Length: 212
Image 1 (cartoon, rainbow, N blue to C red):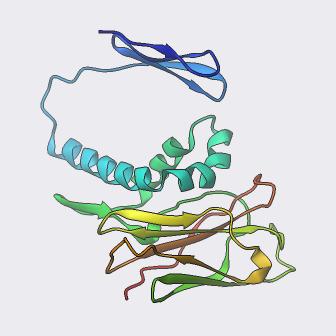
Image 2 (tube, rainbow, N blue to C red; image 1 turned 90 degrees about the vertical axis):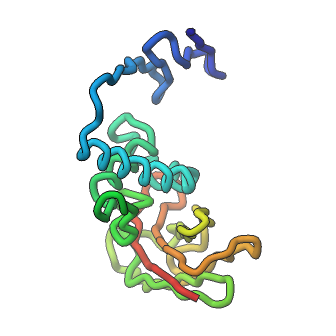
Image 3 (cartoon, helix red, strand yellow; image 1 turned 180 degrees about the horizontal axis):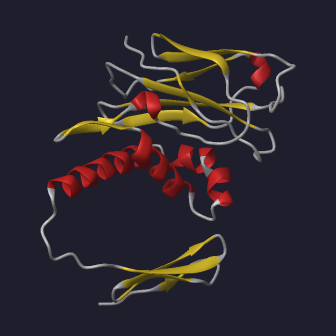
């Protein structure tokens, strides 16, 4: 069975036989789909489990990743999710089979050359996560108008709440509310900055966990 279609730009995308075609930064990309006949080894099963864990995490925060890794992805002519997956699969998976999970302190949810938050911290008050950071107007690779990016991940559900364009760097504080319909006993929190023109972004910084 074969299927293909044109996207809004008139380019082909979809699956035909054992190939799949999709647009990437203005170009059509075609790749083949392999067939596996031999049984998987234990190491391969472990690797697959790690990949599944990372992919599930990134799927939940996909809109945030699209902003946080967009600039890095363009440098490599790839899409943001692939670049974020490659980094976190290598650096942010922990555990011994079959108990494999995300290593939250080593996760990056944004990547770039902008100066990261200075001495960031997060606190939980009722259902509000308050982020704070220091600001030094003399520091390099930053501007007072840089906007804060905040992500709060709820691993038990799993779900996430986030803001990709919050208050400016010079305000030194911002907050994000956890909706009443989300239940949790632990939160994993991250903060980063993006320039006002959206052309630069910082590496994210882990500021969790938070426990009520």
